[in-house]
Image (tube, rainbow, N blue to C red; front, side, top):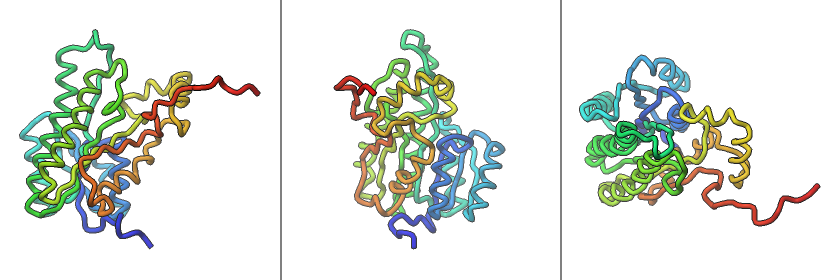
Length: 264
């Protein structure tokens, strides 16, 4: 028997940025827990195969175009999603981007692209959907952050600024909307292989270097986020808001070798 605390049957969840990658994995997890979905990308056409996959799981999936850098697109998405289902219970702000460069090479437009997508987009999508949740006195907003919310890495200055901003913004929105029954939390993955960073994972030496610094001994696999996203979307997290949940294999504990490696 499934645990009713984690049962999302009857709930409607929006997951942004579901044409590929971690967004699809999190959407699948919510669907398997019982939620019907609104899935978004810049074009409806890019969502056709994933829509069919969700429907094969026995859940509903409604495709809506969304460009999180465009204010009107955000408003139109919120209205269309709400009109289709009549309510919105869960929002996962997954849409994001990165441009990996040394700090001295970052261009003005690189900064704008990253911050407008990851930070400004997350805020205004949250705002548009909160306007639908507040009258219902219920909502779960899950902002997707990153290990860069709490740690700095060379080559990721604008990205880290955007994700650190998401963490701080999450706390502010939690305070704003808590009285209306809307919780706002940040789910922060550690080092996961995605389309944005897959080139790094082709370097076996780098993967070994990374894995040595993760207490659980490996980078994240996409399904490692399933439990966390369902938890934050469910009744089980009813009294949790304004928090950042790191799903990082422990890399943020700052693992270092305090002793030389053992000799065989």
